[in-house]
Length: 336
Image (cartoon, rainbow, N blue to C red; front, side, top):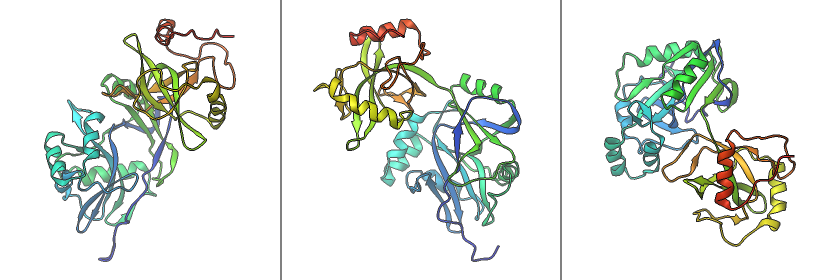
């Protein structure tokens, strides 16, 4: 290392693929922290924070001043979280993400303090170590962080082997899930790699399509409704899980089912339709506003826009299905 050595302006964080829980002695299993992905660059002039989209987080999180003890030349990868009783509370973190004024950020740091949970080390002493195996990077990270005892900066602990048990305990504790990372894997900036697998808990909800949001002519997402306390309510939008075939087929069908107004009050702008299409949507949780968080279209209920799948593709029971039928005043199609 020379005096002229400097850290890069940004490193695109490594991404993961989704999968099911498994056991493996070749993998490290750790909590999937429910927060904002952030990289800390320890420059000679002090630390700086960037999110996965390269946005500058320094003023949003005054806690950064307390992390000046991180040795210069290090780049850390981790997650910013707001903890409630030891569990990340994403809804409490959202106000921190939306703050732009320094005085409000300082007040929020007192009322909703953030913790930086670190899980990888990308540079050490201004030298990249991303080509080293995860097991080595984690050992170096532990040796770097442990002696510092910095406020609200902690190491994400993990276990090797017992992935299924780790996932079950995480779900029981109300956590989002776990990450499985191959111990021999190198850090691949910006890559969505099979070496990292996110194993997330999920709920399922039977929904009806009440509208479509558009991006020009192409259909962008579904506006969905679901039964809540016996009444149909809008529960947000879903675009993940929609294939291009789905988008084209649904767009072609809009004229035959379109209506002027939404069937229930809805704050979104959309092209509204009669509630004649039904789907299974997986999601993480229901937000305080009543929307489904991190929704993904899992399956169509017999009324797929292109085909009629055999059997029942829902995990929800018949009683919930009948409730939704009643709330929209319509019957589901009979499975063929």
